[in-house]
Amino acid sequence: MQSDESRPLRVLMLSWEYPPYLIGGLGKHVADLVPALAHEGVDVTVMTPLLGDGQEHELIAPFVRIVRVPPLPAPGDGFLANAPGPAFVAEQNIRFVHTALQFVEQTGPFDLIHTHDWLTTLSGMTLKQYWHIPLIATIHATERGRGRGMIHGEHGHQIEHQEWQLSYEAWRIIVCSAFMQQQIQDYFQVPADKIDIIPNGVYLPENPFDNVAERQAFRRRFVADDEFMAFFIGRVVYEKGLHVLIDALPDVLQQVPVRVVIAGRGPSIDDLKRQAEALGISERVHFAGFISDEDRTRLYHTADAAVFPSLYEPFGIVALEASAAGCPVIVARTGGLREVIRSHETGLTVEPGDTHDLARALIMTFQNQDWARALTINAINDIQTRYNWPEIARQTMMTYKTVFRAWMMSDWRFEGTWTQASASSKRSLLSLVS
Image (cartoon, rainbow, N blue to C red; front, side):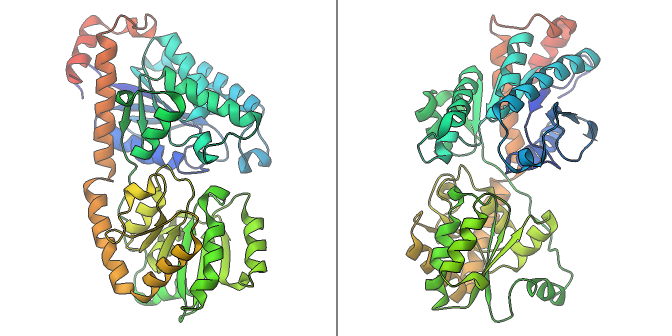
């Protein structure tokens, strides 16, 4: 996207999460997307809070910079484990704005702002109005969706209001599934032609084991040789449906020996432990807590089934990650999961919240392993053709081009930083995205 008299399209990306600070899937999505966008010729600056480890300024590729903004005041461990409070979010967004204004003085203007979810709404809207450049929003999930159609508490209403503001202020909205598109339309009265559906993606991992013996040794850390392993990874919260999985285990254990490995942290762990104890199956459920990316990949390669019985799931990237590693997948037919996994073609789907349906799917998978693993071949084909980051970056670039062209043809253009660019440079950049 360069010429002698022009520069690459410059995008400021605002994200509350970015490695090494990760809570859910948002930060990983951004981390995988930006290098692929750089390959498309986009100059991306990611602005994110400095929470946990990480450098304030990091150049990870020629066209990818990470700017981590230190919080003030610094949050304690309670913040890192739970949702941020409104005062902290507002303060951090103000710091984003100040940092962005200083950054532009040093590096030149941005052409677009791309923000992710409600936590960066305030800074995204403020910079849009100050610079008079378009705002694009990726909405990964909604507060009402997480509450299964309900909003809980004053903080929940504040979040939904910021989600509505973001959907209103954005020139275009990106969502990961048709399910999310419908939610945005229903909850915020957004017209369908303002929303682009661009799925999440994964990379196909290499086999993490050098030989069968190494794989077996790792597997024995979690299950005996005569037991099957079911694996879940994600936030341990109610909407992930883990209580349904534990309720299904007694039925499964009547047919096959199995242990469940649950990786991740969250507020539901104690409730799930009590549930397993009440059912008399505590020894069959292993709570692994936080695990490294390397161990996650190893578990995908050793588990007999990856199980995601979510009650709410905007997309379900974990189902693709498991499939990419050749692990049979069982998911609830909810949200984006029902779009990602085709039952009896790329995995098995079950009715959300249906304990007996989930038990039947687990038993079928364990008793028909060759058939179950054959389904992953179809899933890998889907990943290679649709759910890969080069294709996702290409689609995102199309959204950028659409918005930038519309902005250039509109009467609403910023009069500040953009005037630093010459008229010929503006014309050249427009020709590149036409």
